[in-house]
Image (cartoon, rainbow, N blue to C red; front, side, top):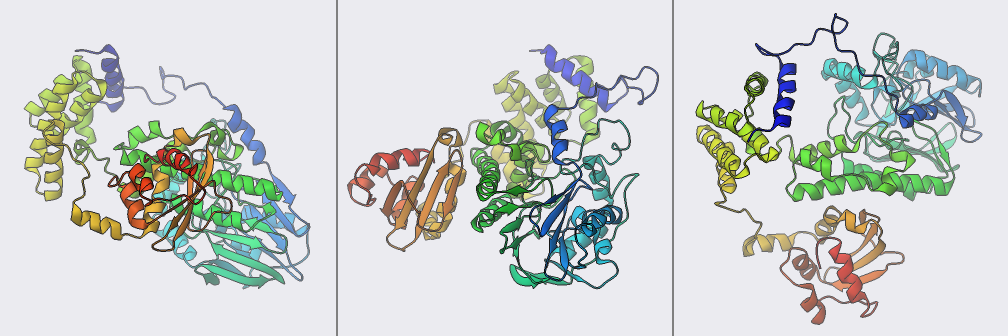
Length: 587
C-alpha cells in the first residue's frame, strides 16, 4: 500500500538531509531563499514580560528584592548593624546596578552573601557586593564543586547551549526575542554579556544551618530541587521564605534544554512540602515577583508541588504500562486546574521535556525497543530516506530491501515506522522480528543479543512476558519495608479518575505499628508516614495482607469478610475502601 502523505513527508525530510538529488535550500539571505515565518508573539508570553519588569520591591521594611535587572533576582536583608544579600545575579555589571539601588535603601554595609545554589545567575556578581572585603559567603557544601564543573569541565558545550536557550544573540536585534523566561535576558553570555565576579563560599553546611547574620536569626535548609545543592533561606522573625529556584512564576524547569544532570523531581516536590510546613507569610523567589499573605503562599507552594508530582507520577505510571518517551508525551498532560494556574504556565520549563527527562532519569536513554539499541548512522538513515522518497515506495518495501541488503538496523527502523503507519502491521512486525533476530545473532554482547532475540519472539507472538512471582520472589517482596509499598501508591493513581476527588485515607498496620496517611488531591496522591488529622477513611490490617492485596495475591472481599482488613469507622467504610482502591487500580 502506498500512502501519499507518508511519501510527501519523507520527501521533505530527504530534502533537508541532503543527498545527491536532494533539493537544497539556499543559505539565509540568498536570492530565492524561503522567507522566514512571520514573527509571532504569544499573548501569554508577551504578558509574562510584565512579571519580569525592572523593579525593586519592598517586601517588608527590612527586606527588598531587585527584579528584572538580569535573569536572577538579588534580595537585600537589613539587620541591626549590617545587611546581607541572597543571590548576586549573573554579572558584575548587573550586580553594580542592583547595589546602587540597595545603597539608596540603606547605608548599612553588606557583610554576608548567601548563594541559594550554583547557577551563574545567582553567583557571578558576588565580588561587587563584597567590595574587596573578606565577607562571609554561605552556601551548601556542594555548591563550589558544581560551579567548578560548570565553569571548567563542561563550559564549552554549556556556554553554546545556554546562549541558544536564553536568546543572548537575539536580544540585541529584532529576532523574535521576547524574554528569557525568568528574566528580561541573561547578561553573562553573548555579544553584550558582562564580566564574572564569582567568589567561593566560606561557610558551608550539609543539611541545615541555624545561624545569626547581622543580628538576625537565619535558617538555611538543604532543599534539593532545580539543583542538588539548592537551599532555602528562612527568616523566622518575619516569616519570610526565600526558596531560590525551587519555585517561580512559570512551569518549573524539571529539565533544562541547555543540559544538566538529572533533577530529582520527586525530591523537588518534597522540598516544596517542607517549605509549606514552615508557615511563611512572604515568599521571595530568586526569579519573578514576591508573594505576601500566608494563604497565598500556601496555595502557590501546594499547587507547584502538585504540578510536579502529577508529571512525575503519571510519567512513571505510563512507563509501567509500557510506554516509551514518544508515547508518554502524548499521555501526560496537566489537568485543567493545574494547567491554567498562573504559576504553571510553560514560560520556562515544559511538561513534555520534563516527561522525557523523568523517563531518562529512571531508565536511561534506551526506549525499550531493540530497533533503537544500535540505530543506523545519520548518514545511512538520510540516504535510505532520501532513496525512499525519490522512488515513491512504501516503508515496508524499503524495509524489505534494507533487510535483503543485510542492513538490519535500517530494516528494523523502517519496519517500526511501517507498524506506526499501519501499512501492513502483521508483515511489518514479522519483518521487524527477522531484523532484530539478525541483529541479535551478530551481537557479541549477551545483553544485547538476548534482548533482541527475546523481543523478536514477542513480535512473532511466540512468548508473552508477564510478571508472575514465584514463592521465592514473593517471600522477598513481602520482606520489603511497608514504607516502600506505600511510597509506590502515587505512581499507580489513575489521575483521570481522581480529578474531582479530595479524600484522605489512614492506614494502620497492626503488626508493625506503622501508620500512613494517603491524600488524594485532584489527580495527585501524597503519602505521609504519619496519622491524618481528619481522615475520611481508616483501614486496619497487617503488612502481609496489604502487600498481598497490592500484588494481586489476595482478594479484598474475603479479606474484609474474615476480618483481615478492618474499618474502625464502621461498615460504611467498606464501600468507601473499594472506591478508594479502584483509584489505584486495586479493589
